[in-house]
Length: 177
Ligand SMILES: Cc1cc2nc3c(=O)[nH]c(=O)nc-3n(C[C@H](O)[C@H](O)[C@H](O)COP(=O)(O)O)c2cc1C
Image 1 (tube, helix red, strand yellow):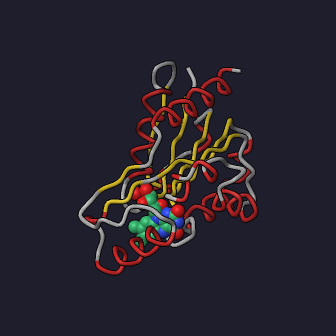
Image 2 (tube, rainbow, N blue to C red):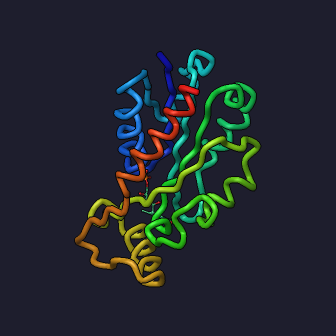
Image 3 (cartoon, protein in one colour):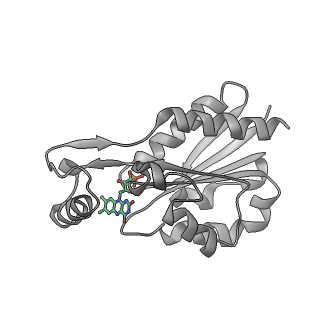
C-alpha cells in the first residue's frame, strides 16, 4: 500500500480543501496524510512513497515557505512520485487554467529548483465577507480589471472538483506504476 504526503500552503483554506479531496481519492487504494507546510519540521519525508505540494497565490506570488521547503528537501522529493499544484483565480479563465498557460505556474517552474513530475492548476475561491478592508478592496479591484465578480457580499468558488479528482487519479496511477 502506497503512502503519500500532501502538503499545503494556504491563507484562507481553499488549498487545504483541495488537498482533502485529493486525499479522499488516494485513500481508496492507499494511504495519505495532509499537513500544513508550517508544520514541515515535524514531518519525516523519507517515510512516504508519494509527495504532493499545493500552494495558493496571493498578490502574484507563492509564499516563500514553499520555496524554502523545496530547497531543503529537493533530493528526497526527487526520489518519490511527486506533483505540484497551484491555486489562483486567474485559473478561472479557460485560457489560463493549464500548467502551460497559467502565468503563476510558469513563474513557479522558473523559480523552483524542483521540477515536478506532474503539474496542475486549479481555480480558487473569492470569499469577500471573510477579507479585511484592504484585501477586499484590492481583490475587488483585480476582479473588476479582469472582469470577475465584484459583489463584495458574495462568495465565488472557481474550483473544478472533477479536475481535482482527475489529477488525484492520475497521481495514483503513477504511484502504482
Ligand atoms: C488578498 C488576495 C490577493 C490575491 N491575489 C491573487 C493574485 O494575485 N492572483 C490570483 O490569481 N489570485 C489571487 N488571489 C486569489 C487566491 O489565490 C484565491 O482566493 C485562492 O483560493 C486562495 O487560496 P487559499 O485559501 O488556499 O489561500 C488573491 C486573493 C486574496 C484574498
